[in-house]
Length: 94
Image (cartoon, rainbow, N blue to C red):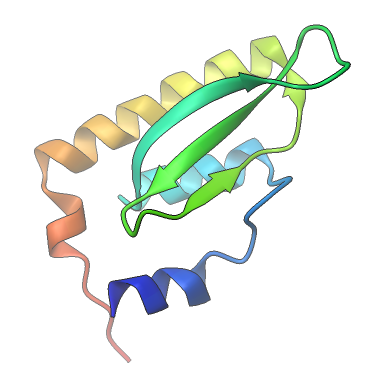
């Protein structure tokens, strides 16, 4: 069931903005995130993030400084979600 909810809620899977990835992490839907290099673009990187259902979301390519700041924010949210056991407490009403 959680997998279906995430599938319906997450509308961007590739080429997403950094804010979209940060918001998914804020809601406790992310389990890990990593930085990847972008092809043919020096100093440009992207974030690939795994969600609680095992699927992945990927940002567009951004300047490395933006990506480094965003990954710090995402990792803080992932840490908070683990502390509060957020994935176990996700409830969908309606």
